[in-house]
Image (cartoon, rainbow, N blue to C red; front, side):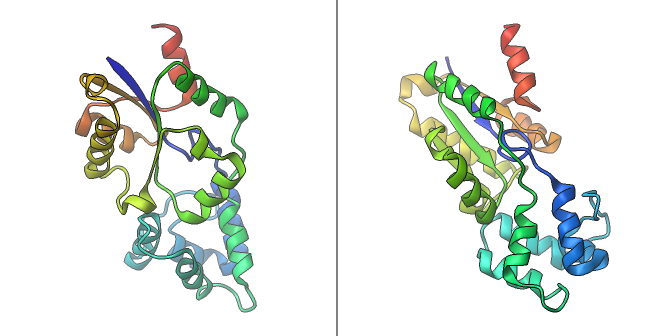
Length: 216
């Protein structure tokens, strides 16, 4: 049996600072606009009453249906006079924290042991391009499954089915059957969807996976 590992990016590999990001946007557009446009308050907490337009903006950007420049331009429409494109970009990138070296080292160790490793991330081109330039994620994984390239996102069942089929097609027939996939994602809804849709075994963190591997 071949065991394949599929990693989420934000919250699993790279640390996120959502509060810092939304504090930055509050300074650019005020809390009311920030809540309406981005759908979160300055503490990074989800807002229940979010406009349909804001949900669509974020969803379309995550699915790669609008370009980064279009996304920034739409955000700028709600910012204080004098706000620049660079101001918006800086606030957006404030969400990204560091990526601890030991996490990538763990991914590399799995690959050295012969396990195929993949990335499955809901994201956007602005964040991913920045992260990939800094950490060269493409050199650590056998494949990158990105919502903005696939035009679908977790926890939609279709994205897990698509990834499962792609992995099976990339492996030699004798390695793809039977296939065991372990998925690490910090969002419970994503883990549940993966379990129910394609039967992947899931973990909420790399630490949890490491502990489980040590006991098995």
